[in-house]
Length: 386
Image (tube, rainbow, N blue to C red):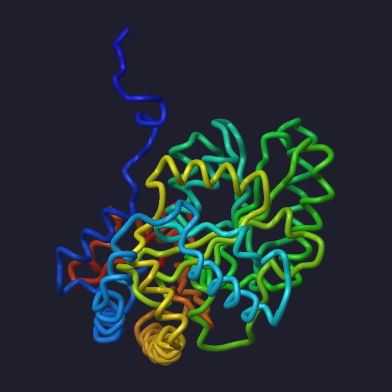
């Protein structure tokens, strides 16, 4: 028998598609990449960040503090400001233990948060319920850990609750419900569909998870990935699952400052209950014992000074304009048989080709698009385009 140097996880982990997609976009300047969530280059706040960094580094005390190690959980000021911002987004002006800074960990983007939560809660062979379709990078995390993803079809306002109940019932009947650990939702302007999960559906999903907990024999968590939440340029604001009364001990919330401010900062955050909090904090300590202190100081100053909100307001207008251009392009160039829906925020349009039309990397559609310097993400099995 051939000996393996790599661990089972090392052998199991496939090359993340996102790495290839981003590398292609960076290597080909003329490429119109519709494949990865790059923020608009022209919108990046270069001058503003320069001023903020100068303010941090011009004095020895603040400069030395920013260039020194921080804590594993993250900068206290940034955690406090983030807590206040989340409460405001959910219309909670004061109080609310679900938003407490003590429940928050600052991470290297929300991606690290998703990875650590999965590592803390899931063993190989476990099951995570996901939207169908779902964020393909998170599916890669699950694959790497030997965790099975069970898809739940979506409706225009989020998860199909009837289907969720059917899947939970079937897993209970088969004896596999004990392997289910969490339900993962990209709840705002979802990657890839652009759909937003209504507050009512979040509450109903949590209620369903509670109902099936006795049969599972352990807590069933809702992992809310809110990476695109602040990129709303239309429609009504939707509260997060943190605002649902009586369920804060089952909600894990992942957010980021990368998308709404600058992707290069890679500053994210997560709120979660015990015992997940302590487990994730310990894993974070093993990963890097704390995210970049300098970048945390940068984000804290951007929030406190009002610069973050000013930039976000301008960014929303820019994305609304670009979404309008994309809609016009789809109307002009796509045949009537192609189905697509217009998002009210985020970065993504989702289009569905007629059944039987292939869109994978070996298809005529993909090759033709690439020949014209257009790059997209596909779900070939279902004939979908991103």
